[in-house]
Image 1 (spheres, rainbow, N blue to C red):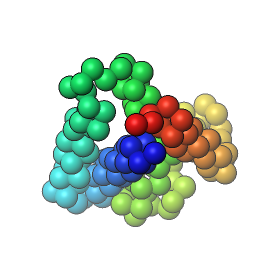
Image 2: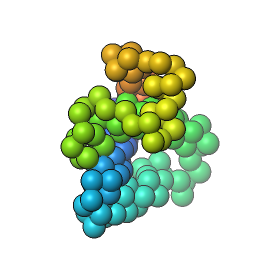
Image 3: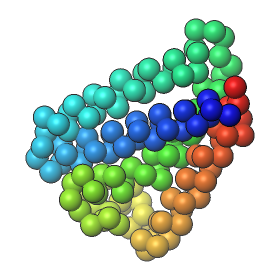
Image 4: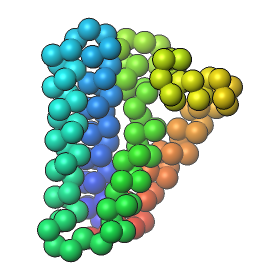
Length: 134
């Protein structure tokens, strides 16, 4: 049971590192921002060691870990970015794809986006707990 929790925590920290790095870069603190983004990339590449890729890890585990990362990124990235960039917590920019998608295509309110993020959080936590047992 401990392995799925380690994977979840590791991927959560990876998402937060990337969000903080982006937020710092966009608010003018680029040295630290680049450092946090480099840590995120290093953590993503070293995530293979969590899966023991050298020991014939099934493709299923890799895909589930990737899906978990995507779900956690969708759930937490914007909030961590907004905190690092000193924006309001539910701020969405129209300068990126996701902001335009939520604001212009779906015309979603911040509460609706929060519910969608909650669903992704539940899925992101459920995948490793259900399928990535040791």
